[in-house]
Image 1 (cartoon, rainbow, N blue to C red):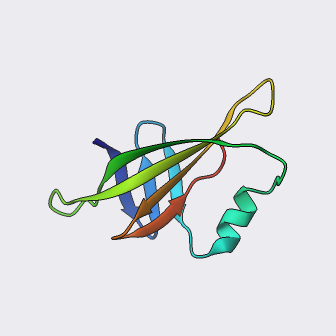
Image 2: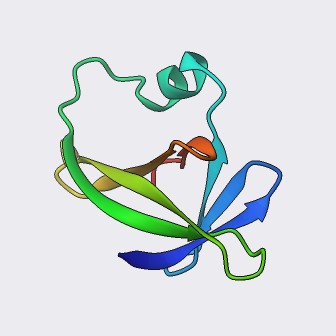
Image 3: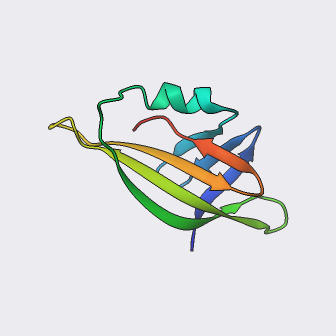
Length: 95
């Protein structure tokens, strides 16, 4: 299981390998803002991860879903979503 994710506080998780931040999703509005194009087709990769909670070596298990949008012929865009029963759902911006 990957351990390159760290809870940095205030509803933010950092992907330490890519230096990408995910913020806590507090409702469907967060997702509507990210998936604005109804005509787009996304591919999804899913894997198990562990999040370092930075409190005496405590890790939380979660699921990472990476959405791929390769409809633009020049550049593939990615969006990460982390789902955890312990700390909630987090979503990144497109990168």
